[in-house]
Length: 83
Image (tube, rainbow, N blue to C red; front, side, top):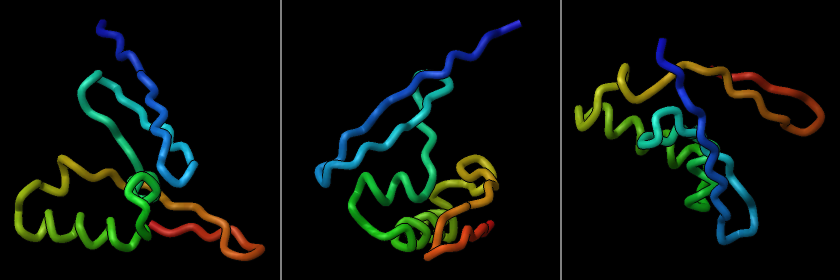
């Protein structure tokens, strides 16, 4: 039985925030759209548009580069969940 090793990388952004990225195989980092947006200092919608363009131009295949997760965030005083 093979055992996956989870590695953690903490990226220190220029704006002072930190983003924790996880690697399961030592080569591929997995990040949420919000984490990528934080690293590049842009809004998450910018990352969403880039991902959509990459998939539409078939540069990468959606089923091999995207995972389905609910996005939960606080908006004002309420918790909002989006797919």
